[in-house]
Amino acid sequence: MKIAFYFNLVVYLTVIALYINETVIGAISQFFLGLFQLVFAIKLSFTFNLAIQKTKKHLNYYWRSILIWIALVIIMIILPEDKYASMVIVFGLSMIIGLYFVIITYLIYRNSF
Image 1 (cartoon, rainbow, N blue to C red):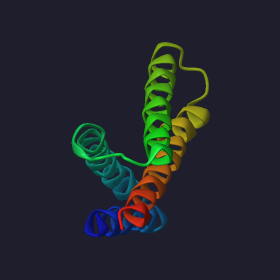
Image 2 (image 1 turned 45 degrees about the vertical axis):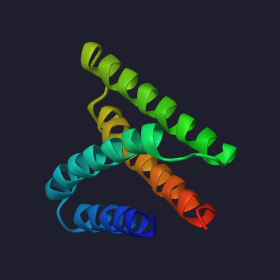
Image 3 (image 1 turned 180 degrees about the vertical axis):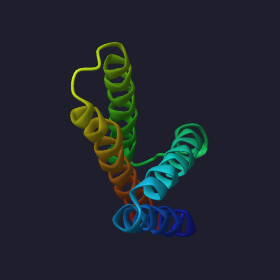
Image 4 (image 1 turned 135 degrees about the horizontal axis):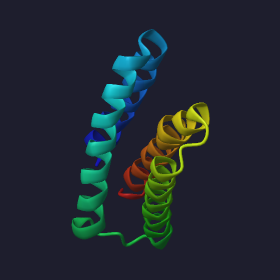
C-alpha cells in the first residue's frame, strides 16, 4: 500500500504542476489521473480488507462525491448556463475529489501497519 500511496501522490502533484505550466496538458493528464483513481478505488472497494471502519466510511464518501460530480456534469451538458462555472465544476471539483482520494490512500497506508 505504501507504493500505491506514493504513486498516487506523485501523479496528483504532477498534474498540478502541469496545470501551472500548461493548462491543456494538465487537463489531459487529469483525465488519466481520474481513470487511475477510479480503477484503484474499485480495486480497494472489492479486494482490499477494509477492517478499519473509518477508512471504509471515507471510501463510501468518495463514491458519493463521484456520483454527485457525474450528476453535475450531466446537468451542465443538458443545461449549459455559464461556461466558466462549468469548467470550475468539471476540472476544479474533480481535482478536489482526487485530493480526497489521495487522503484516503494515505489513511489506508497509515493504518495498514
